[in-house]
Image (tube, rainbow, N blue to C red; front, side):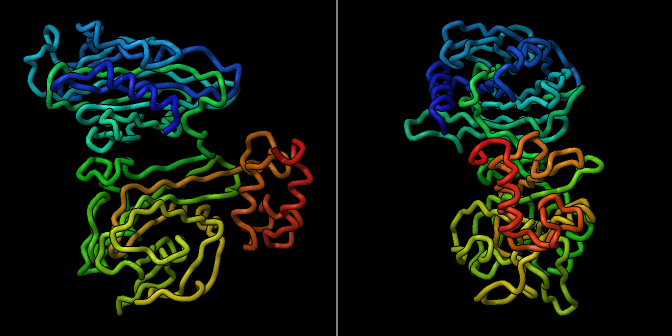
Length: 450
C-alpha cells in the first residue's frame, strides 16, 4: 500500500477509535485522466443526494448527516486534499445513533450522471474500510467487499482498500449502492470523492479496454453474494461429467471439487482484441494439487471421465503448485500452454502453445473451471482492443504508440496471428515475431518508445 493510502487508513483509524465505536469509511477519489481534469466531483459526495434504507427495498430517506460527534469526524487528516462530504449514519432514526444504539445493517443509494472527460470515461477509485463489513455495488455489479478482520495492519489499525470502480460505471445514468453492517454502536459511513491532479497520485493503474470481475477480492471470505458465479451451459455440462466431484462456489475450500465460472466478452463493433488475460487468486486446498488443471471453452470430458485439452497450473505458474499455498495465477490467452489430456503427473513441456484470442471473438465468453483441489477467491478478465481507425501500432487504442503497445505485442510473441487483419502482425506473415516488434518500435510516438 502506498504512503498516501496508508496515511488515509491510519488517520481514519485514529479519528474513529474507541471501544465498540463503529468504523465504516469510504473515501472516494478520482484519479484524473489528464492533468487538466475537472474539479472535485460534487455529485458523488456523501450526504449530497444520498438515500438510506433499513432494508434496501423501501423506506428510503435522506442519509443523515452530519455526524453528532464533531471530535470523531470529519477528520481533516482523512484526505490531504480536504474533506468535502458529510458523514452518513446507518441508523433508521428518528433521532441520531448513540452509545446505546443496537447492532444494525443499512443500505445507501446514490444515483447520478457521469459525463465523459476529454472524450473518455473518467477513472474513479474508491478507498473503502468498514467495521464490521461493507459491500460496494455499482450498477448492479458487486465491485468489492470489505471485512475489517481481514484488513488489520501490524499496528492494529484498519487498512483502507483501494478499488477501481471505473469498469462498472458508464457514461450517463449510474447507481452506487452500499450495504453496511456493524455489530457495535454509533453506526456511520463516510464517502468522499476528489480529483487527484498529479499523475503520481493515481492509486490504481487505469484499467485496460475491458475488465470483468467475478468474485469480490475479499481474500477468501465465504458466503457473500458475489461468491455465486455465473456459469455457461458448457461449464455446467463439464461439472456434471466431473461427478461424483461436486461443484462449489467461490471462497469455498476445494478437495476433489470443482469451481466454475464464465466471463462474458463484449467489445465495440469493429474493434479487434489484441490481448486478454485472466487473473485468478487461488489457494491450493486439496490433498494432491501438483496435477491440478484448468478447463476452458475448448475442453471436453469423455464418457470415460478423461479431461482433454486442458491447461495445467504447473505450466502457468512455471513450477508445481504446493498444497496450502496461495497464488495469483495469470492466464495469458494470447499465448496459452495446452496439454491434450489431464494426467496424474505433470511433467515436461506442454503439448502446444496457442493463441486463444479468436476464441473470445467467436464465443463471446471465457469459461474457467478449476478442478479439483483449487479454491478460488476471484477471477478477473482483462481485455485490450483497438479499432480500425487507430494508428498502426496503437494496439490499445489510446492514441499513442508506446511501451504499452510493445508489451501487448510481446504477450503474443511466437504465436499464430488471429487472422489476416491482426494489427499485431505488421509483416502479414501469419505469426507474431521479433520482426513485428522491431517494426512497432520504429513507429513509436516518442524516443525510446516511452
